[in-house]
Image 1 (cartoon, rainbow, N blue to C red):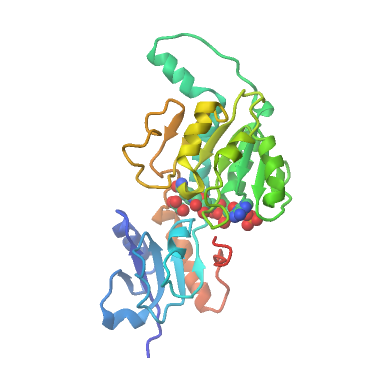
Image 2 (cartoon, rainbow, N blue to C red; image 1 turned 90 degrees about the vertical axis):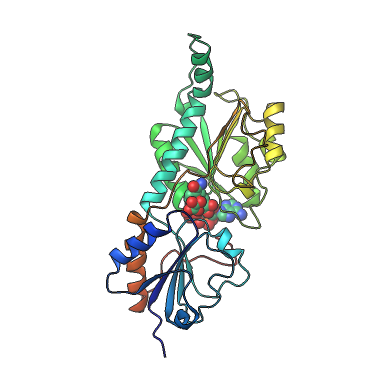
Length: 318
Ligand code: NDP
Ligand code: OXD
């Protein structure tokens, strides 16, 4: 009878070897194996650390005790109909939250400080300044106030922006005007000039970033228009609605890190739209050097009978 303590690394991205090396360094007395393993060894696998593995990859492991998702979003994992019914732990770490916060702050300031306009002026050798509202005159609205959204909100608040937030459940966060649920969405949008989306992809959030939503944003504030930043998931947004909103003026600019189809097809008009900034789902990479020690610690805690942290609520989808 196996005691199922082997750690499986099932990573389908280019950094698979870096994850394997890091786990071997952090858990030197454990057997750490890359996916796929021979069928004779599958009973020994107790823990699976997963990112971009093919659907069904974990089905053979009947003694699995927990799955560790090496990113924050578990939408891809939960789409696997054969995923074993064991606890799923997602990546929550200050390193990941801060990388995302860097991205959010960079792009909020890019819109706030009209950097795209100054870039265009530089190319045309135009020396002309424009009105610059103070951060305190501008409201940034953050959809999703979880591990990442709450960190980004805090940093933006300290820069001086007015911050509104929207989450599923009500919250009290000092200095942030929090709205929740479907009932709170309109009031949240009505005060938001720069909309930052950091929601997970669930059945409830799919396609939430659509034309009717963009039309409810505040356009007559200090910035004189509304802006979108989506670094959550591509399935939250409807690309054609973003283009329509830009054309009609409901949006004055957009920064998109994620797309319904990734990589973004070369034929997409988003690539060369003058008001759109495209980045290739790179807002925050999970760094093995930051994350692995905590996963190994969680495995050790689990084996001492202590609860796992950051366990995904499968019914809620995040
Ligand atoms: P969390 O689970 O900590 O937070 C999710 C937040 O979204 C919570 O505040 C939650 O509300 C809210 N939420 C979920 N469903 C709804 C809903 N139906 N209506 C309103 N609010 C809702 O996740 P993280 O902050 O760790 O990560 C967020 C997402 O960021 C990930 O799922 C992933 O998709 C994305 N991401 C993208 C990266 C990139 O490189 N582009 C990198 C890392 C993450 P409540 O607080 O009430 O539960
Ligand atoms: C994540 C991501 O969810 O990188 O961590 O997208």
